[in-house]
Length: 125
Image (tube, rainbow, N blue to C red; front, side, top):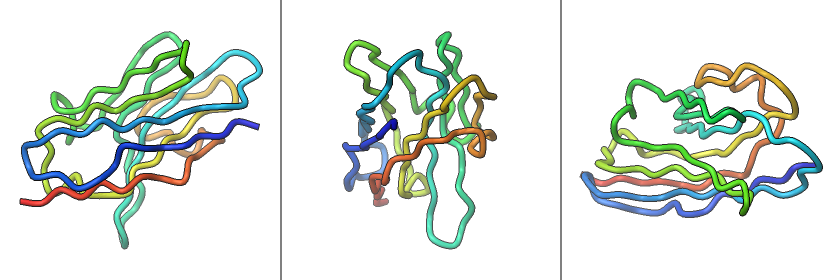
């Protein structure tokens, strides 16, 4: 059973930076699509960024040029570098992973089988 644990959230002023981490455990074979999603109360979950097993990445238009997704396979860790953050980036951020081959883009949350508990990011103006 794959387990995902996020960390790195917190409070930051607009224009600042944060780096989120997602430690993955329980993998017994090949890794597939992984991604970051976010949600605020009363709103639908939104895809932020994904990275496929071949390194292909996708980003939501709202974060392109500001956020970077990456992974360290040796450490089984997924990262989200958040630069130039804005108040509208405030949300609970979730790490997710696929259990097998699947679509891998910011609109494909339903294709991801494993989810972490989330880490809160709050951006003040």
